[in-house]
Length: 142
Image (tube, rainbow, N blue to C red; front, side, top):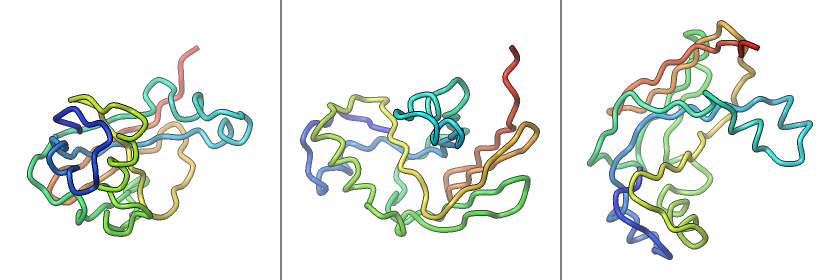
């Protein structure tokens, strides 16, 4: 989460602008991603971006262990060190095009692949030293 306004900052300046780290689940509906030209619906629908349960300050966000569990089974286990682009690079890049304000959150994604989820499934995102976000997939009521 951003703690201080950031615009056109360098990678070396990013640490001055990051307030803290929290687990997030970047939910995607794969069928919609394939069908739509734009991914707004597939990535931005209600309930598709849960965050929490804690916001932790002072951790080295470039060296955090990440674990993803689908129905209790570990399906991702890596580190922020394995991201294609470092967090400092991501935040710096975004700040070139978007003024980041306190409270803004950037979902970095995770190294590796994910699996489709269905109603009743539980997914956990764990960041070492930060916490575990656990959510259950529920079908939309119409």
